[in-house]
Picture 1: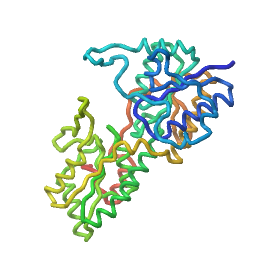
Picture 2: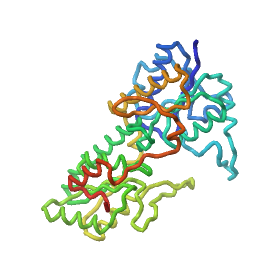
Picture 3: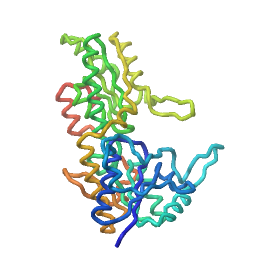
Picture 4: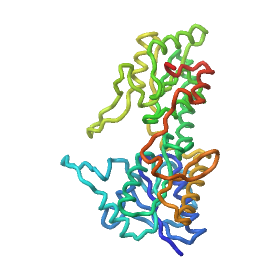
Length: 360
């Protein structure tokens, strides 16, 4: 029986989103002869009048879309629709409005692409509205529980590694300690993986405490070997040594993570007099063309998600485990995060390479 399914992207953008939308469309139309509707700007597309949706066809993807970063459907990462802050400061529950929008389209199922926070919200919405739902994990942070690889993560690590490759020659040319601040929210996966791959001397992640004195001693030790420069990678949510967060307040009043790289750079200079420079990668980690691995994972996730709909297996999330695609109950992971512990194999690798990764 022919079905109508919807697809949306929720939360922060990343590389590989257009690839997974393509995979869902090709599989649904070519294999099952279904109709696929893209919902614009995440759940916001279900709150407009008229609804902001577009029917997707395989021919929409004949060109360059799968090679582009971002999401051509648009996304939304502003707040929780169950507790939405209005311009006048009041809070409203907009969930019924979103559910009503979904029902107006008369879709048989929704495929939602998001990270751990988005999955928790989408699951709550679809359960409340009795909507058949399948989730696909995407996040550069790679912190979705029970999932080895999320869409967008490989590209983010690749960008951070390339940045270290480009910072090393200028660090050596000017005898500097270069600090690279990367994204990752409360998980250090980007920092740890890029730091090892990019030859960093110090890797700071939010899961493992550090000592400024130990960082200084490590840099002095490097100097004693005759090397005149160092590379430091720090994840954005690493706290200052006193336990306070490094944040930046923007003109719209929003407070976001940022500034830990500058703090670490200043402290290194104070204790070692090594000249420091700080690079904050920011959103370049999100908007790049997806790597081959992100394209492969996005394609595999998209095909598998459509097949779950065909099997009428709902409230599931597609995950990558043991070098392949499978699915698990969304209840088991929604809103939960995957972080790094001291016994992580890559922590041992970093130690073995002589990298300072905190007070273990």
